[in-house]
Amino acid sequence: MVDQNTIEATVLFHGLDSELALDLRHALSGFCEGIQAEALTGLAQARTTLRNDRNTIVFCGTKPETVKDLRRINPNASIIAVSRLPETTDWLNVIEAGADDYCAAPFESHQLRWILDSSLSFSRAAA
Image (cartoon, rainbow, N blue to C red; front, side, top):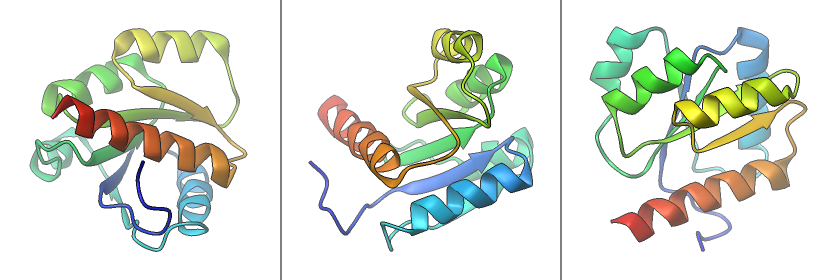
């Protein structure tokens, strides 16, 4: 498992509305000092920013096309779809498109911690 206080990962946001991104950033910073989240403003920036490593976590919107694009750019990234409201069809569509996980607001620190730990543990196991 990942150490409780240190997470070595690049955390990126893509395609989230500003309020949702702010809520997520606040929830992430509440339990882990090591996370610095950066917003990607478009796919062009995603292509230059996303490193092809296994310690990249991208929180993105629930459009399946976005998930597919991000997966093509970095097949090793952990892609977590984020929504304001939990919708079963959104969840199924993004998982089928290649997302690793799905979470909905309101964000709870234990939920986000589990997502980060499992994403990074899976990435290390696949290495």
